[in-house]
Image (tube, rainbow, N blue to C red):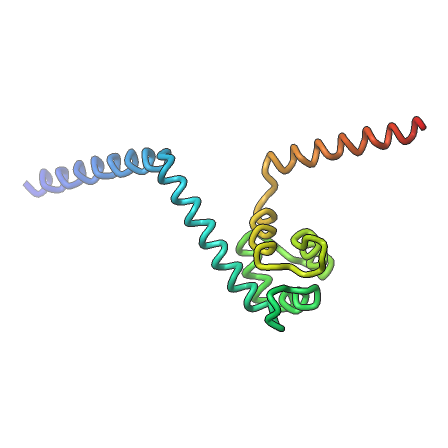
Length: 150
């Protein structure tokens, strides 16, 4: 009798596991669920970047200049936190390059620039990033060939 009860519970657990697996598969393919998940991730990223911005904007002028940015990156905990978000800073030159890529050219990084810049730069290169870079390199190659012919 005990064997039959244990076997019955085991069968029920297997059926429950299969049901949950199939439910999760369907849920992951549902467009509305994927959209809500993406919106949640974007909102969370904005909140994190807002906290980082408030921490970095030492003079509270609504922007982070290069000096404030470097003092932010001097904090080991901030660098580790950025690394956990797949944005690793190894040297001061990395910090300069990051500031230049996030900044729109005016020497001050705004909250909007920080949110968009970090979102664009964190993580690994995507196929579209590589394709854009390849396209730009081909354009530069063509420009150089034209210059050589002149």
